[in-house]
Image 1 (tube, rainbow, N blue to C red):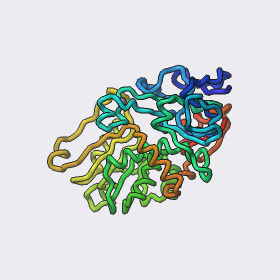
Image 2: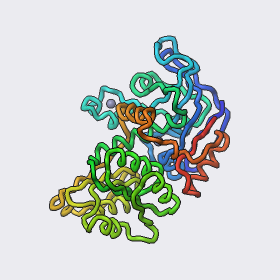
Image 3: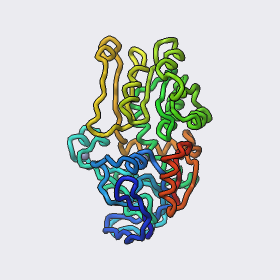
Image 4: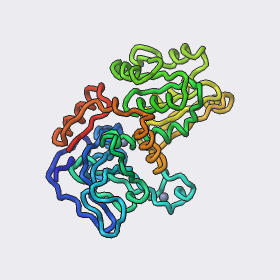
Length: 342
Ligand SMILES: [Zn+2]
Ligand SMILES: [Zn+2]
């Protein structure tokens, strides 16, 4: 089968590889759509998520497809079923899992291999993080359940309340999903900041109430101006840079909350003014990945039509052109997600 193999930074090649063989408790899925993700782009450009990915590997982790082979020991899913699966399956045995913090599992099983014709889904992933896709939504919409799950987990941690003013740093696909979720949670106003005008225009189309052009404007000053000098109730960093992690801390009001969502490289340190936590009672919260519960909820929101993720797919490309797709995401910056179709 054809698969996009990642060997290292910016070293991605479409090759002919062996079609995966399944065990008695596994399924083989023919991938019908795989969506590009900020995490993929980061790994492609910087390659530092060592705990999560081992190279070389078939790349990609957001996918949906048709079950074409079912191991003899399985009663579900059935052959021909349209399914999606999360890219992670917690062990359910470690201390973190037993505390209910499944996204922090110490023995997480990661599933890579979306940019290929077929993917083998392991037993653990089938039992804890696989869902059937209802017929009325597309494969690419279903694939977006993965990043949406992460955003739901983050939004829960941020504690967005009805009527809040929410500031989001970064209008990439993750920032845009945060925008959609914040609006649904009842944020009265969502302010987006980004360096790229086209992204901000797109955010406005998706419902952002105000935009800050970070290239020409002082983001912190603008947030203060838009909030009578107080700062936003909730600030979400959706880029993953120490400078914007620190900037987020200067944009929040007293008693508010900061969600540091974008992952910085391991070992990164930021400085934080203790006054903010003590006299300001600001809550600073990180968020990593999602639990199977969030994956299910994300798919529910897409299938019910409560969240429309279709506008996030800005382009479709065949698997053979995946390197070009990543070049486009690196340079053009006006695309949100590209759907890769084998
Ligand atoms: Zn993703
Ligand atoms: Zn675990």
